[in-house]
Image 1 (cartoon, rainbow, N blue to C red):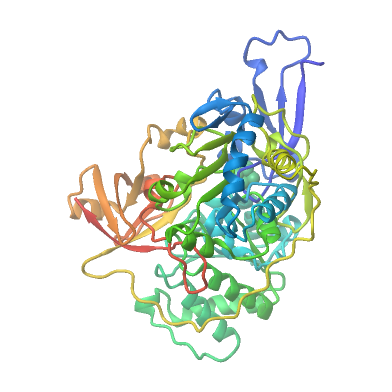
Image 2: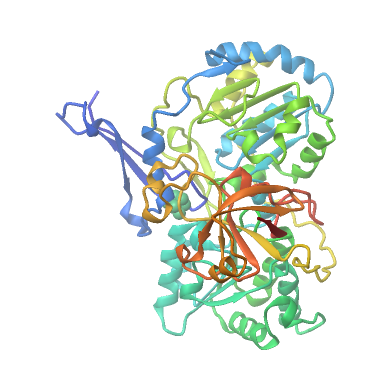
Length: 552
Ligand code: SF4
C-alpha cells in the first residue's frame, strides 16, 4: 500500500456539508513524523473555504482520546460481545410495546436513519426521535436554495445568526450583497449577531419573533389585522414597512433561517410564517439545521416524536434507551435523574461521555463512513470515501446491521425510502407573548452559537480570544457589569435551573449585547440547563430565550 492516503468527503460539523480532503503521508517519506498524521485541505471548487469548526476535523481524526473499544456494564469488550450481552436485556424490555426509546442524531446518513427505523420496529417502539432537538422544528420545510442562486440574490433576509452557526455561508451571502450596490442584506434576530456588521439589522425583543413575523405577514397580505407596539416588540411600523417593501421589491430574494438551543421561542411557528412570507413575496426559503443531515434523518423518522419521548422519560414509562451518536448525559435535560430509573441504556459515541451507560459502542464520524445525506440544496449526495475507523469503532449503520442480524437472525439491508418533509401542522392562533423580563427576573438569557468548535476542541482553544475557556461563560454588557459590580464569577438562575458562569466581556464579540440580556454560548451542558426544555404550543422541544436573574 502506498504511504499516501487521500480521502475526499464532507465536513461533519454542519448542514452546509463543505467538501474536505484528508491526506496522510507523502511518497517515500518515513512515517514517524508529522507526515503520519492526517492533514486537512479544502476543495477550492466551492470557493467557500472551511470555518474553524471544519478545521477541527483534523484534531478529531488524529485525536488520541477517541474511544476504540466497546464497554458492557463497565467492562471493556469487543463490539460482538457487547451485542451478545445486550440482547437478553432488550428481549425482556421489548416484551412491552413502547418500553424503549431511540434517539438518533442528525449526523447520520440516510441509510443509517433507515436502519434506525428498522431497529425501532424490531424494538417494538414508536419512540424514534431526532437530536439536536432544535432541528425537529425544521422538518416541514422543503428548502428552496442553491449556492449559485444565493450568490445572485438581490435580497437576503437572514433570520438568526447564520454567520456563526454556518460560517462558510457568509461568503455567498456577502457575494450577493456586493454584487450590485442596490442589493440588500437584512438581518432579523433577538440579539446582535455576526451578520449585523454587514447588514441592515433589526433586533426584535426576545420571545417576540413569531409575533413580529405574524405582523409582517399580515402587512404583506394587506390585512394589517395585527398591531405592533414598538416598545414591546422593539421595531417600529415604519421599519416593518421597510422590511415588507424590500421583500415585495426583490426579484430573486432568499430567506434563510438558523436557530440554536435557547435562542428562538416557537421556532416551528416562525418557520411556518417564513414559509408563508416566502410564498407571498415569491422569495426562496431555506432552513439551515445544526446537524449535518438532520433534514434527511428527520424525514425518514417521519414524525415529530420528541415530545412523546421526553414525556415518557419524565413520567418514568420507559425501561430502555438507545442513543445513536451522542452522550445522553450531555444533551438530554435532567438525564442524571432519568438515568437513575432506566434499566438499560446503550449509547454510541466518539469520546468517553460524562456518565456510564450500561453499554457503550465506539462510533465514527461522517468522514469515517460512507453513505448519503440530504444537502441544503435538497439533493441526495454521497459523503464520499470514509477514512478507516480507529480501533473497534464502527459506524452506527454497521452496528445496527450487526445487532439486527444477531437479534432477528435475518440480514437487514439499508434501503432508503423517499424522505419527504413532514406536512406542516395546522396553524395556531398567534397571541402576543408575555414579556420575558420582570422585576424578579430582570434579565433575558439567550443561547448563542459561536463559529468555533468546542468540547475538546484543541485547535479552537488555541485561538487567542478563546484561550483557557474550560468552563461555561456568559457575555454581559460592560456597563451592566460595572453598574452591578459583578465579580468574575456569577450564578444565573432561571425557571430551568441555575449554573455558575465566568463573565466574558462583550468586547470579545463583534456586536453589542443589551444591558438586560445575558448571551450564553450553549455548547456547555451547564448553559443548556438554564433553558426550560418543555414542549411549546406546537409540541416541539426547542427551548428559546428565558427570563433570568443573577445571584451573586
Ligand atoms: S460551515 Fe464550517 S462546520 Fe459547516 S460544513 Fe463548512 S466548514 Fe464545516
